[in-house]
Length: 329
Image 1 (spheres, rainbow, N blue to C red):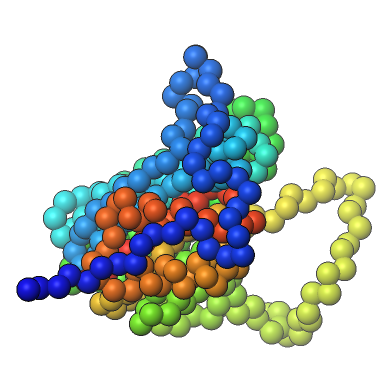
Image 2: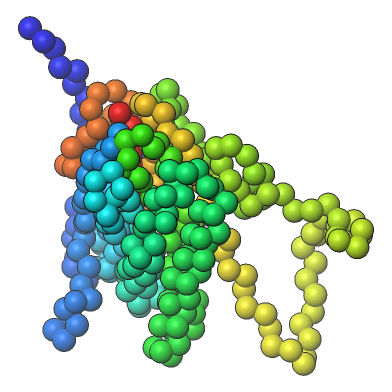
């Protein structure tokens, strides 16, 4: 008789003890009868299988927002552009600014804008991915990201709010449907995590801003040691220059663009997530161990099992969680 390997059962929480908040939603966000399109579901769940990869994606309202009756600030969008082996799958996730009334709208807008931009350029992007033209990919996706976030700034101006109040982090994954192409492309702006489960161990592969160029990652490169005029550059000691009374104060610097193109191996699991999932995964070893046990062997989990895994709670972490995982056959 054929024995089928069984996954260990799901658990409710890991760590030193159960979180303070209830495990299930308690309060709904307030609704405006004239703005019902503005409502955000507590949970969004999606999945697909293309080429050699199986995708699972989820966005869940955090324990704190569930308790306080606040909307989910995270947004998730999955889309396929094109058909057959020429298709390109996009996963976009965004997190709106904390403690701002339009955070959920800004996150949803960011996902929609980048999806439109990628969708209109998907033929070229898919061709660049298959051709391993990483430089073209990085520069092209940087432009698309800047334009999409520029739309948010324009929307903020139309609403009469500061750009910092109507903004969002944006993190995306591109998956070609071509089974012969195992390149997986991450790009985005803002906090979160990019992890890879390989040979039973988690690797934190979030690209650093000053990461040197190399295979299979294309980063930003290290800063130069001297100026074009030959002057040596010294370390920034954090000494601020007093603002000039004749010039407006400079705006805070924008978060850097991040990019990584990596080659998947059979058996890999790639995990892209917002800060609400990345922080407990980095901060609580038991969560990483639990997901390793759940995801290292057997078939990729179904949607319900993936939802249960993504909701394993850790005391002290109560933000929204949005995650997309890709299993490689």
